[in-house]
Amino acid sequence: MRGIINYIKKQLTQNIIDQINSIDINNIREAEIYDELKPFFERIANENEERARAEKIRREFTANVSHELKTPVTTISGYAQMINNGMAKPEDIKEFSKKIEKESDRLLHLIDDIINLSNLDETDSIEDAQTLDLSHITEEAIRVIEKSAKERNIQIFYSHTPAFIRGNATLIGELVYNLLDNAVKYNKENGSITVFVGEHSDGVEFSVEDTGIGIPEEDTERIFERFYRVDKSHSKKVGGTGLGLSIVKHVCACHNAKISVKSEVGKGTIMYVAFPKDTTGLYDLSHTV
Ligand code: ADP
Image 1: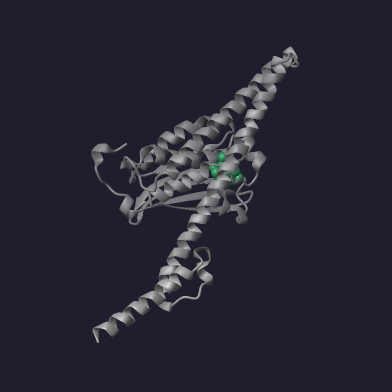
Image 2 (image 1 turned 135 degrees about the vertical axis):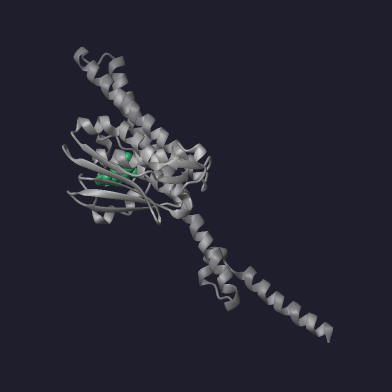
């Protein structure tokens, strides 16, 4: 009797193993399998798809990085050659060196953003987490962008209450700075920016509202993709790299924060970031930045 049971067990197991072995791992969804195995294979299929998607994004990123780096280097090299060959008239030299300086700055900015993004790619958790007062970090970032805002006569209104979150100070600083910088870059002359930081029962809210050019509805999802720009030439003119919002999205993800956009073309844009309760509140105040 025991022998028969063992034989049946072996036979059944063998059937399952045969079915698993016969499956084309790249085409799991098409395979005919026992209902009991379906959830397991569904998970494998999902993981395969996620891996393929990540691989595609990485390949596209590498291709885009090469292209984006090549453009400023080509310009720099072109102007330097003209000066070197004596092809530039003396009165042009000042203008050419200004262009070389501008493109070099762009290149450095781009390299900084690429390094930031690849560091973020390496981690999905926060290192050196400490209790931060978001209103304090925002105040510092406003001080940095004030000069470029003034140059275009853009007014900044800031209302805040102390708002504590748990996070990495450098990354949160990047997030705040990138959103404020965009609010200046894509604003109109004589426009305004309204910044809000506050703590409420669900967590901490941070928002930046501008009176700028706005974002077409069909682009609002895509602006968080690497190198995606609604208007490439406008972004380049204002010194954009196309990576700022990808960095913002990454920083939000590793702080469990949610970012959302509301925008109207020609009227302006609001970016909201919501930090949930579990990443907010008064933790270890001795390390507050
Ligand atoms: P960039 O370096 O080009 O500013 P970002 O990743 O920061 O790159 O933004 C991606 C694109 O989203 C920008 O090129 C711009 O088209 C659009 N964008 C971002 N913020 C705003 C804003 N506040 N108003 C209008 N458009 C914006």
